[in-house]
Length: 199
Image (cartoon, rainbow, N blue to C red; front, top):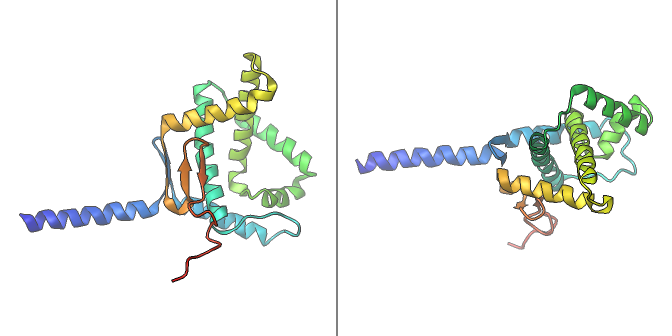
């Protein structure tokens, strides 16, 4: 019997260990796998090879991984905020915002370099636009409720932090450490891997 229990425990540890290795982030009941985050990173790196990146401030390595993990968290949080606030974001809203951005960057042919410069993947561009729209709706909501415009950004941050606390956020340590006070993933290593200890 002891051997059977030991064997079962060993299998359980193996399974949970593998699951932990594949997990990326968890926000509430939604999970994003490490492979999904890595896929976006790979897309960004591939896009950089197709444009002139001279003069762009591009992030790499652990910082890029953490940046995309953070984006995934923020996307889920703002989508929940939209639900809580009864905001309806239609496909036409996103399309209109996309058109505005394309005009701002100087045309469709300038969109890809703009995304590369902003460390954004083309596949997550619509999600980014949706976040912008939700933030705009939040700003309008706070202003209409009497909050001074100068304090609106603070209220948005408070709402984001409160939503993260309500849902619960778990982050794979390879991306960094979740800070519930700022609702941000921070580097576990202050040097972000730039300095390694002597053996």
